[in-house]
Image (tube, rainbow, N blue to C red; front, top):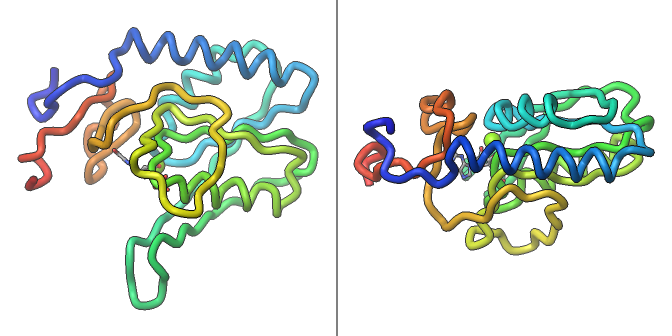
Length: 181
Ligand code: XMP
Ligand code: MG
């Protein structure tokens, strides 16, 4: 285990089980649809790459960036800016692939944007869910959930702290002393 990790929350084996379970569900649910997987960069890259290699029906992929502003003079608290330029969205049934559903604002905003841009349908898939952290006014359902976790800051398998730890093959809780806690 990496020296900065306090506890492993999702082992490699558990991640493989989650990927297999969700890939089967999506393959079944979308077999008569035109599936487009949309990866929310950057934290979801590992999950996306694993889902892609396990989903057994045809699909296409796209990527988008979402940026949240915590506070600032020009942005209001909790605003999320979504940058996406996906062509022919009106042809697709979209599954948005996220690393973690925290306040929920990112996935809510991404879903709104996909629908505004004409997607036939949008559902949400997140590796992790932190329900304790949900923001007021977020009522988006998660269609595919890997694992519900407690309110701790986690890294690995794509998730970062200050752009580090994304390459760990598991998801773990970061030691508080690493981020000055
Ligand atoms: P919201 O609050 O919009 O946020 O649901 C989702 C995004 O917040 C980041 N996030 C985390 N990143 N460890 C991380 O590395 C965490 O514990 C964590 N909690 C939230 C993440 O970028 C996610 O896409
Ligand atoms: Mg993210």
